[in-house]
Image (cartoon, rainbow, N blue to C red; front, side, top):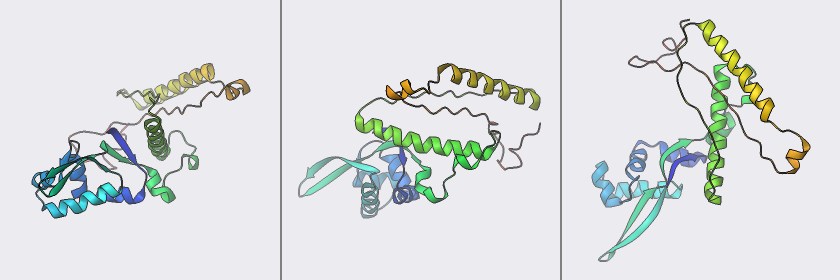
Length: 210
């Protein structure tokens, strides 16, 4: 079972968004049969079986074992992942394209970059899993409070300079690197306001007051 599976197929994405099927996927983090699930989700076994077949058809659940109980064979299934994330690939025709934006201070560019990250990481994770190899990745997550908008702007400027300096130091774009099979890596650095807690979120409430 994967920790996170990125769904790229539009039909699979649609199947996963059904509230009942979402609940079934949540319950199937631990293996279970249709009979067991029917008790947990409060639905008839036949209806649970219908949803299980749809999820299995789209590769979101998998067979763990079959148990013989008299003349009946009980199928035990499990979700293919503990969590699911829908890739922008599932909405390819309307997915955001980072190349449409050029302003590094644009929130829309940040969203487009995040969407591309989900898309690319989904493919990389699937490829690494198929090859039974570990995927090399690195991320930093934290929070910082600025005294003023000018401090935030200064921080962004210094961060950009520091990152550019590191890229210049370690990037090898020469012919020798290409000939040796050196692999490119994607670098994305983002900074955005944290969501406010204990309030009703709205575009107005989330605007910067500085």
